[in-house]
Length: 181
Image: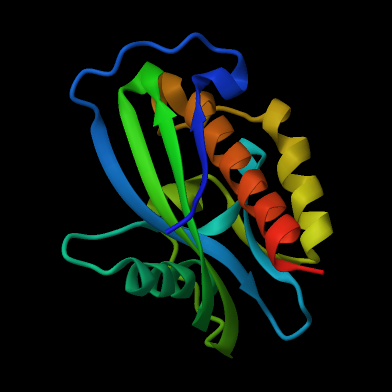
């Protein structure tokens, strides 16, 4: 499977710290297209965060199944996976945390119009947006230096969210450069 990129503190001009038995999380996320060729973006208004849909893989869950579950929860849409772009890795040394996400491209086959957001997502003011891909890239990129700390994530909130925003920007750029004409 292709490695899209490994994001580290170096990408943010932060001096990395040594890892000591880091927490490891596996995720599944990606680009979901609707029938208007728009992509799903979760906008967490209270954090000024724009991100792709997806999340953590549960114990014994396959990445593709986790992605479809996360998409259903965050968008209310049942999706069919079209392709796997690869994996993207985040090395957050200042929180001793590594995340490895499998990244997919999918399209909506059914919209239930029923979101199942977590309490934290609701607290962050999460709203689903459907945007043309270039508009989504612009929103994601422009939010990176204007993020607001979350009420429930503690002092590492902006640090983590900067990785999320840069990760998703990187995924979209990779998709455009490698999978479109």
